[in-house]
Length: 131
Image 1 (cartoon, rainbow, N blue to C red):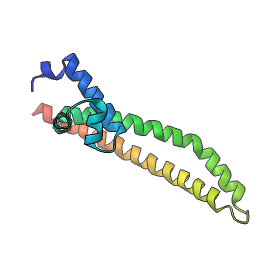
Image 2 (image 1 turned 90 degrees about the vertical axis):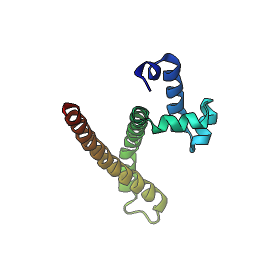
Image 3 (image 1 turned 180 degrees about the vertical axis):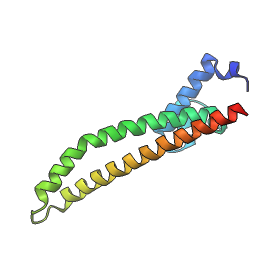
């Protein structure tokens, strides 16, 4: 497919609609219905390396936004844990605190891995362009 067709306003608008719908839907069928595009079109988009890159970037933005939202809960979770360390049965608050803390730790690990992977992918892409 030529770059002229890929970058046409209609094509770009459809790709953006598709990305938005895929981010909000559980299945490709649901996403197709949501954005008004044919399921085959979405599958064709998903097979395109450039679209995959755009989709991953959009997913990452949402993922990072959600991490930020979780981080705002972190202090409260720590406070709940501290407040309930010596209570009689604070199980639900402690469990919630544990989940937020564990989630926060895992999210940072994931971001670190994604950053390292991005560096490797960029280095590989640069190396491939040289050859």
